[in-house]
Image (tube, rainbow, N blue to C red; front, side, top):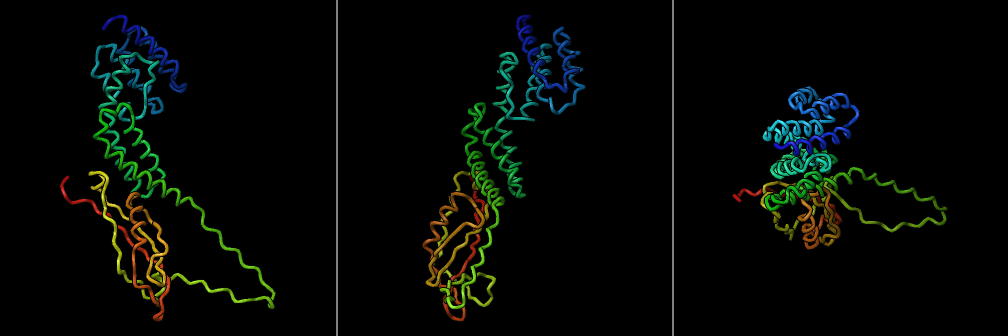
Length: 308
């Protein structure tokens, strides 16, 4: 390794130490002095005694510089790889280290980001399944940031399905967060009492019955065609999704309103709402008379069992 290169790395390291967090100043100052005097092994010993999680990325950068000074390139790469594993979105400021270190760091990120994105997706999906939707939103956003990172561009085609899946679950997670934050509807104000002489009979509003009304016969489907489930990718086809559609069937057996009570998959829910408008039923009845009825329809999109 040339003396000119070591001088370049030394200058970069000095500028990096000056920007180090204040809490680690004494130990890092010691490392700086050892590094500046080319005492790389001694600097590594000091770095080995540091356990600050707040400065882990900075410590690993210095460790890589010292290892490069000793000609231990493979070990320097491992130090940089630990940064990527711990914080995949972290970037070493190009102005703080030598071009060689920057190039080495980007090479490591190119190799590591696809695996890191997939691992983060697994954690995000676990948050979604446990209904921790706020955490899922943050994690799915990080998955998409990794997938769209320039260092992952070479792996773009292999990450396309992961990106589609993360986008779908991000939309579902955001919708769940918004629904949870929505305030309950305000109670309707009580009507003002009118003088007795002016009281008139209000027009009757048809009641909408539900499954909780035991004396009402629920509507019977005549035509209720569900749209086909067409997963946008093979990876999404391996997942199962469940949701609930609600419709109001009027006295003529037609669907006068439809809404998604629980999302299943965004694109499928849109197709389902369109299909529901054409459904026909034998209307619900109470004592033989047709009535309006609010019907809940469970939606189940099962994982594909065929080999892709």
